[in-house]
Figure (cartoon, rainbow, N blue to C red):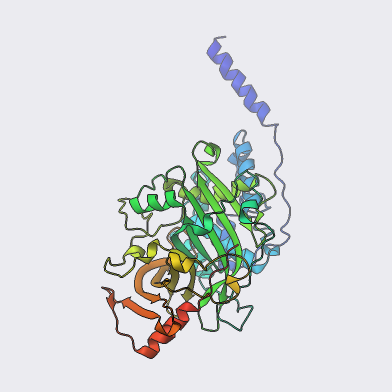
Length: 452
């Protein structure tokens, strides 16, 4: 017998033997299935339950080795991320957040897995089905009332047992960079899927890369900090940052983090800044979530910049359009807080110059009371229209600038100067003395978003 045919027969024998090496795929009845309208559930069952449930839904060709081994691995991995057979046991807010994330993965083309759809074309969602899922999730719940109703937008103080430089490193060895609070703003996000606000800050490397458009890919040394607060509905009808939730870091070092696409990941939770996860496996959640944006160097944020990039939308040019004739350029300043007006679908961010930031700190004091800014401090409240975040379903980001208000603090509080620039050309508007005093008081009394 020729060697070729011996090889063919040997491979055939191995293929037959492989059919008997079949580790199981656990199956069991649903214990707490997701509760949703029948139309929504039908879509999920058709397109998601094969991998994201405890049911066994294998086609005949899925059971042929070695394909079976691949299918088994994908199913067990999928269940660990999202299991519709048990999701119903989670709090309603968690269920809703997981559905938002699932729809986001679907609209970005990451789910169902392309290789799965190639063999199971019925699993692919139609545009109408995606629209139906979005419509089901679209109504935003009203943010919870303030825990301290005495002052709108008030935040609970944060007291840490450790200094930032002494916070425990993440399980993968990534330390929390204690300088993150002084980084500049890349963008803000209003997350309606989980009722949080987020500052996305960048170190100098990240800021310079965003300003120059050098973000494809982001350069080594880039660091992002994503800081999250729970939203609180104030007595003024505005939604303010409330309880501090977490800070996440994303650090670019192609050599050090070559096994995770060049990025190091970390997350620290609550006022004690506890490292996220039980071990290094938490990184899988980070890389899995960011995988749909691998063509954008795994970055969701559209930085606010005037840099021009001739490709898909990866920067936010619209929000950066402030005229050069303003007395100050606040987008380069550090941030103090933000809020959203749900009636007008606008968002505003409060910036401070270096003098103002001298009294903006961390810990229990500044977050619990209005700040007393020294003479020479300048505050800038920039207001934008909002638009949907094209990278994250459920999120909203700044769009077209609407107004910039400045308050310059003088030695005597009655001598503070208020100026506002608004309209298409940001012409300085005349404001009556009473209205100017009211706006000055409002801006000076905005509480800082509490930081650890």
